[in-house]
Image 1: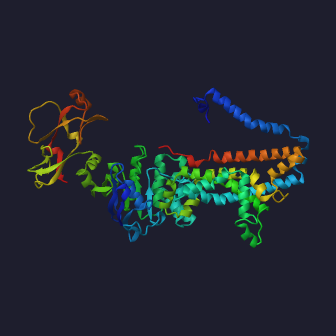
Image 2: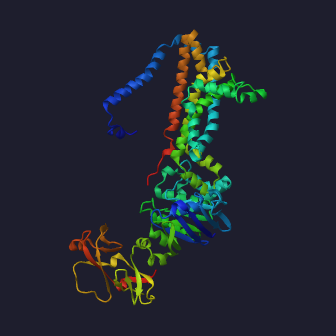
Image 3: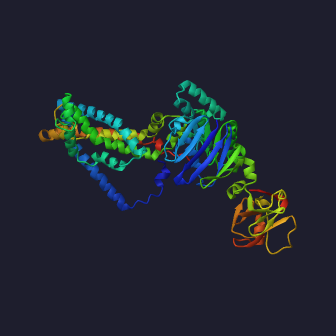
Length: 274
Length: 352
């Protein structure tokens, strides 16, 4: 931002700024409170205990896998929602985005009755000798379930903003639909795709309710970092605080990455002057 | 390659037949909403007609029957490139990669596509811009690259949708010259608002209005002897229509106009007189009666529009361009009753 823009008249009432400061304090104060309770002398041993490290790596592994699944499933979903029109599309969009507003524990129960041993698809999987519930796969599925809407939503919005003009030009130049998607559409919405993926990753990393319901809490198998923190809180509050700080740091890094991806390289919103 | 096109789009009131001969450039003129963009979208395959057929060379672009069924090639299968008002260069690719996009998309190897792209950049005088990103190009430069990109795809038919409309008047002439060169032997359809484009680039013009073809023919014939108010407006001519009558053209209000070549017109036929607004004089009061070679029209001024060093005095469909001094001297305002007069030698009469 140039200095001139800082000085430009903004017209923000004072009381708005005061309420905004209150809001910011409401978000930041709990973080400060938490950091103030960290037992720094014991910090390293606490976060490197066997159960903590296991939970950390499990969280990272499952969240990355869930994010990849979100991209693989979410990109086609966003393209279909943004570029096609069919009967019931609006209803379908609302339903697909339902996990966004659903309590995660409800999502976990729904997944259990789908992939659980007695579930809709679970019996078929069981016959094949595959058990999903209460496994690491279940963790990934739970995370994907809650994180997918973030990617679809952010990508669909970007696709609509970019519009179809570039795609039409590409088609008249002889590019088949798959080539257009790969060489024009996706590069144009890349910033939104990256920030959507980062958001999905963050949501997957913080997943608790659906994971606990659908995958349980087995150390090294399904006990992710949030579950570990919740468990430790009962027995060792210091460990819980230390691990919480680790999660906060990961979240800060993720937000910073998302900000960079969605920021200056935003070709999608660029408009050439006449 | 020859384009034969006939299509109907019911909800837009569009019903147009058009033929473009091999190597011919046809300019499509018409007011806003006349159906020009619909025409291009139909040919490019971005819009499906309710019914109609189109053939490009020996290929069927679409053949849709009355019930809306029938084959229709998808845009990428048609060999029809489109150049729009905005260059629409892909912002994430360099100028060179933009131009190479067409060949690459049809399976030309990278190296060969790059060579062709450089070739085309060369032909539109944009060699030095190869490595630039679209964001680093001016409007005129971008449109130049867009021309190269459209042609590098080696289209059988090129569609141009007001390619100069978004450009500064200072850069439009250079692009017009480029287009004249590249369109020379090419089958092309150009939609334009600018009569200069029609004169420079097109062999033939088609005038659309309300989704129908209202006038068509060689550029000069249509624009020098317009038969529709729209074509007359484009050509900058006043158009007065009536009936041929003994050496002149009688208007509906009974006024008899004389003009060049009026003698040869068969009496009773629908005819028109065209005259440049700059040849029309404006006077008030009742001066001495007209000389035999002078035409007079008693009109009411509807509008005054300054145009550089003249003022266009409009009275309904007829206009006169006069110096500002005359407007001030006659104290002209909308509503003034004035007499327009012009010499028979400055006007031309023809059948419509």
